[in-house]
Amino acid sequence: MNLDYPFHVDGRGRTAATDDDDHVRDLIEQVLFTSPGERVNRPTFGSGVMQLVFAPNGDALAAATQFTIQGALQQWLGDVVMVEGVDVQSDDAVLRVTVQYVVRRSQQRHLARFEREAAR
Image 1 (cartoon, rainbow, N blue to C red):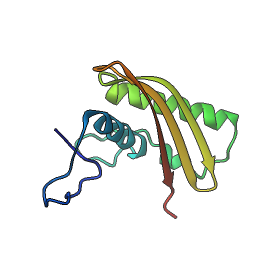
Image 2 (tube, helix red, strand yellow; image 1 turned 180 degrees about the horizontal axis):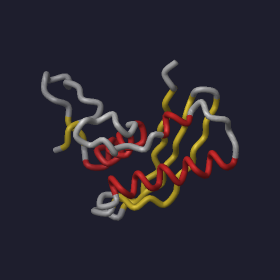
Image 3 (cartoon, rainbow, N blue to C red; image 1 turned 120 degrees about the vertical axis):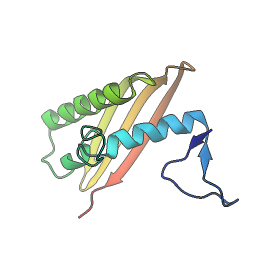
Image 4 (cartoon, rainbow, N blue to C red; image 1 turned 45 degrees about the vertical axis):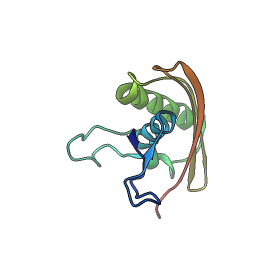
């Protein structure tokens, strides 16, 4: 049993749980949208991509962002997933990230899409 993210209480009044596949997706989401320095006991945790939402778009930024995300996922979840591809799109203040990965334990391939709007 894994805790669901974000933390919440289910309909029975208990801590919400999730299955293994959703838990891995939750872990990826946490790495993507946590900024380094945000977690006190793990100051280097995260990818910092939310800082790039307002940066000027271009091929160089897209490549750097994909590299940054793949590196962060490898560093923090390398024993859980094998990242096969990352696609990043930024429209106005919305960041869309698509990650294709294989869960190492089950060898199942997944495609997950994440979207965040930058706080203004």
